[in-house]
Image (cartoon, rainbow, N blue to C red; front, top):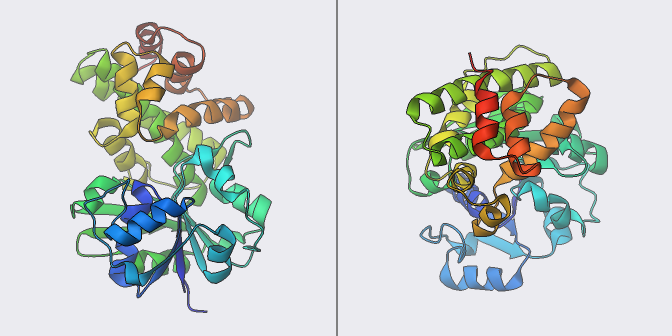
Length: 331
């Protein structure tokens, strides 16, 4: 088989929809797993996702939809995972097909809750996926801007850089530039952490702390990210590369950032529970904060921003108090 072979998109949200559109620009056809049959029927009728990025039109004749995850996995060569991390295990709970010989590409920007494992580690441990067949995708790249045809950038990571380059080629277009990397673990942890720091940035915005303070927060966040990732996965990397700093910046400032908007509501006075209920889409940083906080009990990295966000989200500490505490550590 020539990699990537037949690609299946696994998930039905905005990021899945944007990536499916990119794939169809360069692939003859794709498979697409969605959990709900009614959503699939609406998609076929409307030629667009009825719930996410509904302005983007698709040639549905080139898509084979199914709500049967085992059918999709049996018939695909490469699985592109695009589910929110809190529901990741729920999507896979009916999976009985052997996917150990498949290529798996994770576009999940989160950690598997309870297991506290990044997706690549989880897929290797639970489903026996070969690390050389495990890829990751990260930004800076908002689904909404991809859908609007704005110039965007993606990094494709794999231990086998040749596979990263091959998959990058089927995503590339005039408006989307792809970069490759072998730093799978670093990319995945950075994708989780940037959501945590985006919540902090939103809280600061909601508190009306000002642009100067927000800039200091982001500067210290990238240092904190570097300390953690270098401890968990020691290897040469440039933290100012787009997949680390660039993704942090866009998530911390963009109006499309769910995590920033979630944090802004908290800074504006919403309770954590009320902000969660107000969100239409998942703020992955809420779950990522708890996971990284628990993982860091083992590593002991100094992470005042993470700790402050954890205090706000899980210990009911007043946002202004937690932000003041973390600000004392800023340099």
